[in-house]
Image 1 (cartoon, one colour):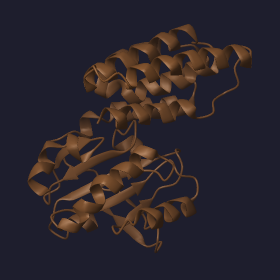
Image 2 (cartoon, helix red, strand yellow):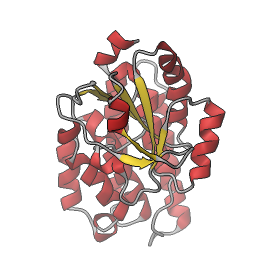
Image 3 (cartoon, rainbow, N blue to C red):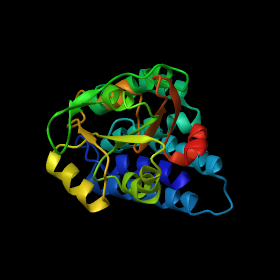
Image 4 (cartoon, rainbow, N blue to C red):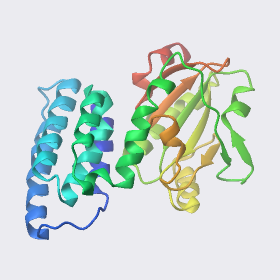
Length: 260
C-alpha cells in the first residue's frame, strides 16, 4: 500500500514545471538531497505505512517552505496535495495555498489538485456516484459508468494512466485476477493522458479485458470531479449507485473483501 501512495507522489515530482528564478545547479542539488531523504524513508523497514506517509509528507513540506518562489516549490506542493488525504493534512494544504507565492498560487495544475480536494467529501463512501460518459478507448463509442451499473453488478472504477507504474502494478497484481471472478464489473478511466494510442498500447500490454474510457489530458479531467489527487484511485460502486469504498488499491477498500 505505502509503495503505491509514495510512488504516485514521486511521479508528480518528476513532472516539468515553470522555469525557476534560481540557478538550475542549486535546484538540482536541493532536489537530489530531498530525494535522498525520501528514499531512506521509503526503504526503512522499521516504519509502518502511516509513519512512512507522515515522514514523507514532512520532508516535502520542509522542502516546499524553503522553495516557495521557484519550480521546486511547485513540484513539492503538487506532491503535498497528492499525499494530503493519506497524511490527514487536507486542511493544512488549503492554509499553505492561501499563503503561497504567485508562482504556486497561479499554477493551473495546483488549482486542479485543490479543486479535487474540495470534491473529496462528495465522492466518499456513502455518497451517490457521479456518472461519467467518455469515448471507449477502443471503439470510440460513448461509454458511461451508468451503462456498466445497469448490468446489475457492483462496479469498480479504476482511475489510471499508461505512464503510471503503480497503476500498471495494481492492474497486473489484482485487477486482472478480480475480473476473472465475475463478481464485479470493472471500468477503467484513463486520465492525464495526452495520446489515446498510449492508452490503447498499455491496454494491450497489460491484457486489460474490461472497457476503458479515454478522457484526455489534465484540463477538465474527470479526476477533479471525483476528488482524485493521485493515481491509481479505485472506487467501488454498488448496483444501486452508492459509493462503497475508495482507495489507491483494492486492499484499501474494505467492501472489496466480500467480492474477491
